[in-house]
Image 1 (cartoon, one colour):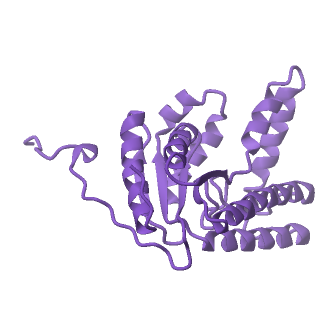
Image 2 (cartoon, one colour):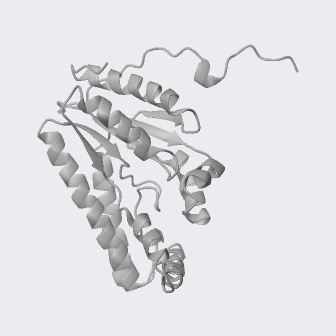
Image 3 (cartoon, one colour):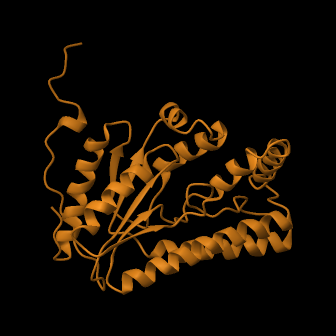
Length: 254
């Protein structure tokens, strides 16, 4: 087979992106999504520093941050590993057809309410005139750990769990209606993610890595970023799109 003269995608010349300001907004909302190990924190911190130096900006974490709790519990001497295994078992039960037990479902629902509180705070800051950069963004299309509803079983038998599942789904659908101006999606392979996050459970990380490409955000444009590339390469592409979004709102970022 003859060699192709077409350069790799990352090296191909890119036309300048164009965005249109969404009706009723004065400032943009930019979402940064990706699995653990994709570099969200590193990329997000750098983007926020760059944006906030030029425009009033707020960096909003819209996750539940339950993973860090689990890893902290697992490190507790003697009892930690046992408790961690029990948590993993409970989590796996939520994926079964009959769904989680009542107590587990209540905890999962409460954690989703924590995300809702963070989401409402982000909306308030946006109304106050700040440009918004988010770490994660709620979506309703793929239940599970990648920013979707936590009560995964769609038809649980328990009446209380069924009501909680229905309520949680409606809350996520409501949050998802507020779509970002652009989604910066950090894609990473499992091997790289595990190398960057060796303290994470491989099975949980595998689920997140596989879910990321399936996420939709109510029709928001999605910029695919190869998180295995050097940081400056990723940031250069991200800044190009953020600048274009800012320009749509009459704001500049250089």
